[in-house]
Picture (cartoon, rainbow, N blue to C red):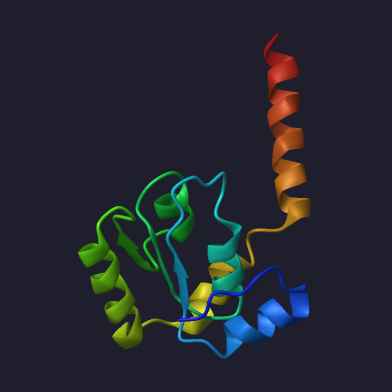
Length: 116
């Protein structure tokens, strides 16, 4: 396990591609983009089972209680032997694009306007 300071996009993609997966023990998370980034490289994730992360992970990774060191240990060790379909992870991640989000927000705003 390596803790790295901020890295540029190419370095992150390379590191994730050659990793066994992502360990993401976040306590406060707005969305969970690192999980999507790992999935985009075909790698699974072990993630906190709080905030938005279980929803973002969509059942493809391993959730753990970030306040329980034994549960985190279990998830990290399980990640090493997890059977997963890297193509399915990449396919799922491909749905998360800024343009798609903008289109969905536009539709939401428009539906709000027409309901007024």
